[in-house]
Amino acid sequence: MKNPNNNNTKLILLHPYTPKQGSSNRLWLLTFISILTIAFLLTFVYTRESISATAPARPPVIAASVSAINNAGPLSPTVVNTLLHYASKSNDTYHMPYSDLKHISDALRKCSQPCNLLVFGLTHETLLWKALNHNGRTVFIDENRYYAAYIEEKHPEIDAFDVQYTTKRRDMKELIASAKEQVRNECRPVQNLLFSECKLGINDLPNHVYDVDWDVILVDGPRGNWPDAPGRMSAIFTAGVLARSKKGGNPKTHVFVHDFSGEVEKVCGTEFLCEENLVEGAGNLGHYVLERMDENSFQYCKNQTLSS
Image 1 (cartoon, rainbow, N blue to C red):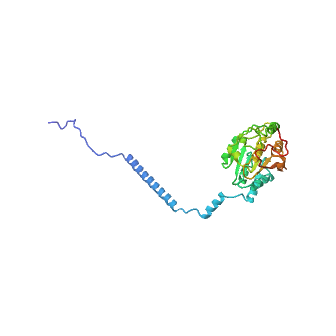
Image 2 (cartoon, rainbow, N blue to C red):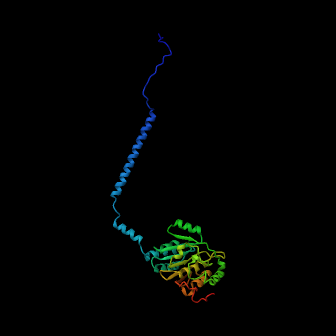
Image 3 (cartoon, helix red, strand yellow):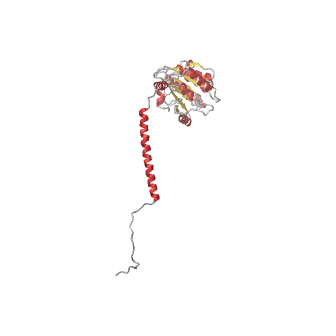
């Protein structure tokens, strides 16, 4: 018989597991948040579908207004005059006076719509030209690739391309002589400059620029204030070739040369745009009107002696 006082006897108790209070609270909180999230998503989807189904259509008056803006014609004289007024009042030393702005603006308003405008130089008036040629095609050419990229980034509506000029202002006489010697070959007055090796021709613009029939061309660049500056010889020569090489549209092209009192502008204007085409040359703006020429033409001006 075992001794009841034996200390080796052990008592084992069995009871169900009860989780800790902290874990239980976290589980209930997670469940509650999940329920709220599902309820919110269901409410959001239902509300969005209800709004979409019951939202009224755009009123006819608003729809007509949007259509009118998208298909608007030329700017009214009041708007044009307002733009010219404030542009000419700028404190910028290099801005154009009202008389020059008005002269170019009048040419844009008279050309067929939409009007094709090519501008050499990104200047104080860049946004003005874009605005005045409303609904038309406006392209800017500048020698500073970084500034052209900056303008396009800041104003995405502006089409600006950079060009690497290889000319020097001090070489003007030699470049003019070379162009006249090559008048029957690389420097023809009627040609596609994309395929030309003429020293004065600009041949590295985007291909589509050479295919456009430009109605108005403004030469307001590049720089030419010192001997090693590019000068505007190439821009003026290229403007003359583009104007004479039109394939369609209006046979006439208005070519404006800013800073017309400068030596390069006057000399190259006389050589490649021609005195007989000069409509107005008073003040600081030269205005030429060039006509489309036959592709077999080998003379820039009527009164020039043809070089051999």
